[in-house]
Amino acid sequence: MAATRVFAARLAGLVVLGPDGESIGRIRDVVISIRYDRQQPRALGLIVELPTRKRIFVPMLRVTTIQPGSVSLNTGTVSLRRFEQRPGEMLGLAQILDSKVRVEDPELPDLSGVDVFVVDLGMEQTRTRDWVVSRVAVRGHRRLGRRRTVHVVAWSHVRGLTQQELDLPGQDVSTLLRQFEGLRPADVAHLLRELPEKRRIELAQALDDERLADVVQELPEHDQIMVVQRLGVDRAADVLEAMDPDDAADLLGELPTGDAEALLALMDPEESEPVRRLLEYSPYTAGGMMTPEPIILTPAATVAEALARVRDPDLTPALSSMVFVVRPPTATPTGRYLGCAHTQQLLREPPATLVGGLVDNDLPRLRVDAPLAAVARYFATYNLVCGPVVDEQNHLLGAVSVDDVLDHLLPEDWREQDEEAHVLQSTAHAGGRSTTAEGDRP
Image (cartoon, rainbow, N blue to C red; front, side, top):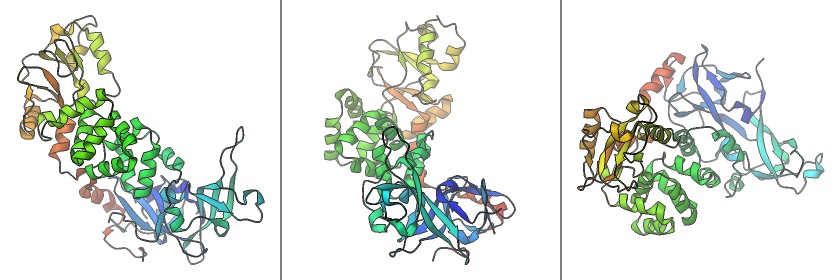
């Protein structure tokens, strides 16, 4: 039986089906029109994420049934325009949940004058087929040794959910953090970009340094700059320390010189020194793209030691594809570079074998000033995903990986571009396409 009353948070992640039962995407949020009076706000529609991660708006009038595992539409003709939030609209899950409110319900005197937090929104369908937010689920702070009780109250009894109050800083992000658990940094970065700026900053502030560093590295440059500038210099310096040196250098290179120098001064000297070295190189050269922290060993290291280093979960697959063999010291810039040993070869050798006997010293090396085009040709010529960068004295300075090359070859806004061809292919069989839709937002 189709539901006419649902809680918004339970819609998140449900599959959206066209009239033929074909999947269009998944629900990520509910768009709500907040009123200035105390009347129940109207649920305008759903934000649906297509298979290519593009998010579109689907009006609630298009919804025919809501089942426990899916939502069905009365047509497959949906607007493929990217969702853009309009004035007066709020995102139910991203902006309203976790808000601090007060409840004035005569039947719940214990909640009078007490701060509670929104955990869900109850929606119901009216006789005119419109959907409105009629109830609010709230929960107080956890008390020692006791579970927090959830109360469901009428919208009219809740204070603090006007647009002006929702725009105040300091909102909790517990629900958003739970949604991001277990996701890859690139996926968290994509979801972070979809949030309004206020919630984006609140979420960034709530992430720990390591997690935030991984996420920031996956953001477009302008979003990286915005996050860093809004964190405050002390926290920003901590996050930069946790970032890969090459990514930190790329970010600092986009900041005004004074701001970049101030952040470098706050960083631990051991963390800032390799970043300072990378800032000396042009960003579109091997030196500007390389990481100063590849896997580096001496000839006396064994295959077992090398494979233990390769297994480091913090390494990218590209950097773990080979180890670099040098004379001491092994910190970049190293002693004389001897060559590399490919991981595939290490896997075929006995654990006690010395790495020095497996060195490939015929593979050409990249000079630090090699331009982007030369680096790309190098990878294509030798079928590599990682390559050594040396100076004129044959000291290893670092390594360039193929992901850094692609990042510089692609357009600057590649993270923000939609895969339109795939969107059309994924939705064409759902009943057609349109750029406008009946029942769209007014």
